[in-house]
Length: 287
Image (cartoon, rainbow, N blue to C red; front, side):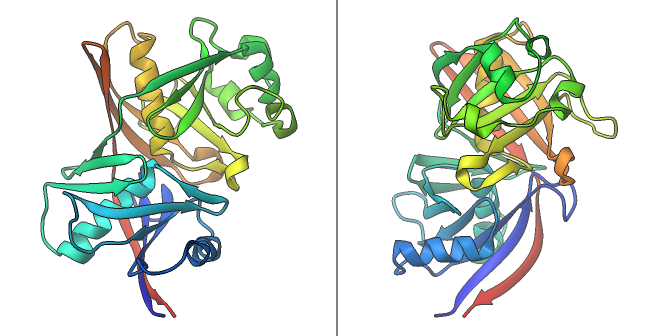
C-alpha cells in the first residue's frame, strides 16, 4: 500500500498556525478500520480521505474521520481538502469545488480566502446557563444573559455559549463529568465573546472543546463557527439579520486561527458561509 498525503494548516494566516489537517489520496478501496487506524496514526483532530480523483455526481467523494470515529461534516477538513484537490489533483486554478460528504454536498469557492457554503442551520434545545457555567468552571455572571445557551447544527452540532468578556473565555475549563450529565452530552462546546485577543485582528474570540471526540480543544472549528454564524443572525446578536465578522480561535493553545463568517437571513432560512486561508505544510507517502 502506498498512499499520497498532504499536510495543510487551515484557517491559518501563516504556516504553523491554524488547525493542521492530513488529507490522504487513493484510499477508496480500504476498509473503514484501516482508515480509522491511519487517522489515529496521523493524530490530528480530523483526517480526510479523497475517494474519487474525478468528479462524481458533481463533486468529489470525501470521508472525514476523527480519532474517535467518522463524522458527517467538519469545517476545516472541508476547506483543507478542497484546497488539496485544487492544488494536487486539478493542478490549475479553480473558482469552485464541491465535496460530496456524508452530510451532503458542500461547495467551496476560491478567492482571497476559501469560503464554504454550509447547510442551513437548525436550532435545537436551549440549556440552563447556570449549569453550563459550572460545566465551564465559570460564575453565572460570566455568561451573557441577553442570549441563550443553545444547540445549533449546520451538519455537526455544537452548543453555543455566549460569554461577556475575553477574561471569562480564557478561564474556561471543562468539567467533562458534569457535562456528560447534561442533555447536550457528547456535543461540541463552542464558547465565544465580543472581544478580540490583545494581539489579534478579529471581531469575536472563541474556544471549542470536544473532549468526547478525542481532542480536548480545537484550534479552529469551521463547523462550530458556522453554527455560531447562524446563532448570531437567529438571535440578532448585533441587532441585524446579517453578519460579516472575523473570529479568533486557538490562541490559548498557541495555534492562532482566523475564521471569516458571513450569514444572512433570507425568508425562513439562514445562509451561512465560513472561510479562511490554507497553508501547505508537507507532502509525503504512507507505505
